[in-house]
Length: 347
Image (cartoon, rainbow, N blue to C red; front, side, top):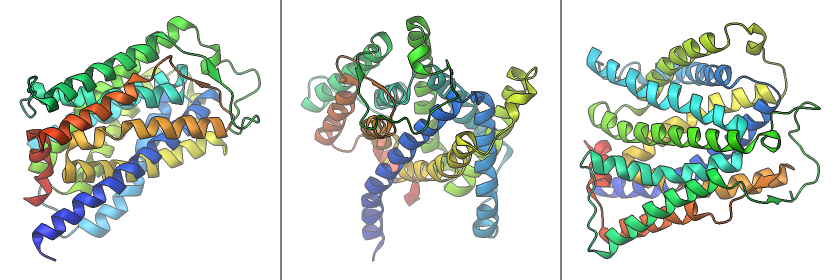
């Protein structure tokens, strides 16, 4: 198979990889929410998650990349430290703290704002263009508008509860637990939903940064490992500061908390971060962000099957936004941001 055929095959694989990523993200959100309802500190969870990912990736990197790894300059290390701060320490801490006071459904729905945010950041960095007089430009603008409208609906309107498909709650918290979304006031729900929006902004920025990083350092495994190591240090400092008077919050029992940490660290971070970096290199950050609505559907279904109460807004326009953005992307052809990032693995 020639070079062009290999590139074509790699881009086809990106579709399957994108689906796997959304499955991992949806299942990880449900497990994390169950762990938080049992009292696990969100900041300690982020530290353990990144530490587990680092322990998982380090032997793989030593085994696979010890002879072929390109050198890393201090300037590049500084960039990775910044990228880890944005995508790991900040984004994860905000996301998981918000998840504790909302629900996995809200978290997945809010992630649908990532395509609009990613596209907006690409516009600011002049990596994407928006031609309002063309059909593709109007579809993109409509998609961005509906994404943001859906975010506001999810933040300001919790919606009616849907009866779960399974009446028995599988991942139940402690008896008398008041940490679940059902016991959170409307004000806290709105405040933490907007905090989750900030997490989505940080996550979208991280995806754009990954495209830039892959151009400068194409080794995806080492790039993922180094960012996980930096993120472990950064999140550890944050957790020590926040939980300095509560040493008991660092203990993990052999329950859903341990399962959530192990799964999110090894699969959700170690495996998923590598897959996300690979997908960005193959098709660009906008392509990866377009698959966010799938995570919402999977989260609603899994939450219902596990006996969780699902809250939905009156309209889910956040889910329609990425579809129209994708339509605009298709009609407009390969835009600059996708072309630039998509070529990073070909250099």
